[in-house]
Structures are given as structure tokens and as C-alpha cells.
Amino acid sequence: MPPAHPRRWWGICACYTLVLYATLPLGRPVITWARAQLTPAQQQTCTWMIFAAVALALAAYLVSLRRMVRPMAYVCALLLARVYWYELTLLTQYPEERFHFIEYGVLAVLLYGAWRQQVGAGWAYLGAAVTGVLLGAGDEGVQYLTKYIPALVRALGCTWSNPDMFRRYFGWSDVRLNVLGVLYGLAFWMTVVQNRRATAP
Image (cartoon, rainbow, N blue to C red; front, side, top):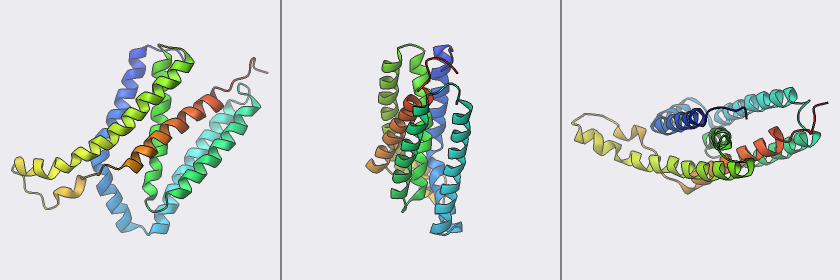
């Protein structure tokens, strides 16, 4: 991670988390629309295409690091890709849940960057893991609170034909996916990106 003021890193983490939390109520209408417009097979295809694009971007990034990282970094990348593939193939009933890995993998790397400005690498990984797990659980907590949206709409005297549209639901399975996203993101950063050569060739 390049040196930067700690407040800048924490500000980026806070903004990213705020976006994740603030867009949670929008997830239900988007998912409902996608299910109405696309067949289950098409939904699967769309998620695979997005992950393929992410994989290609990461592959290009790793190629750009070829003079700085050890060959073992590419072995680790292949192993992690295999683990990711296995995890993704388990999520066939609700393919949109696969995006937890991307969302919280990115958050984990940002948290590592923030912690790294203040503590050593080992403690930064631990701090990022703990903070990421807590924020991942908080994500589901926010979804639990959306059950009060219909009551809030009524209390405001608003007329809304479908106040449940933006409701989300707490799920331990989603907490697990968030935690895995954090851990896999940190594992990728530690074993691949940070698996540097002693000296560049």
C-alpha cells in the first residue's frame, strides 16, 4: 500500500461502507426486477459474466506485477481461484448472493490499507479481518432494520401501495458470505499481491 494519511484511508473505508449500507434497500427492487425479466439460467449467466470480467481485470493486474511478485504468488492466485469457483458453484438458488465476495473482498483490502498506515502488517491484517467481520454483520443488521420501513411510511402519513418493496431480511448465511468475502480478500492480498520478490529482476 502506498503511504497516505490515515484519515484519508479511513474516510475511503467509511464512504465505501456507507454506500454498501445505503444501497441495501435498493437490492430488493433490483433483484425482483431481474427475476421478472430474466430466466434462472440467464441470471446465472449474468453473474458469471460479471465475475469473469473481474477475474480478467485481476489477471491483467497480476501480469503487471510480474517483475515484483514471486512465482509462488501465481500459484496462490490459482488456488484461490479454485476456492472461489467452488464457493460460487454452491450459490445457485440465489446467484446474486455471489456479489458478497466482491463487495467485502474490496472492503477488506481498503481496511487493510487503513490499518497499515498505523500498525505493522500482521496487526493490519488482524485489524482488517475483525473490522470487516463486524461491518459484515452490521450489513445484515441494517437489513433487519428495513422491516420497520412500512411502519415508518405509515407514521409519515404517506400512501404507498407496496411499502415492503425495499425490505430486506437478516440471514446468518449472508453473514457467513460477508465474512468469507473479507477473509478471501485478505488472503488474496497477502498471498498474491504482497508475495513480493526480495529484489526486482
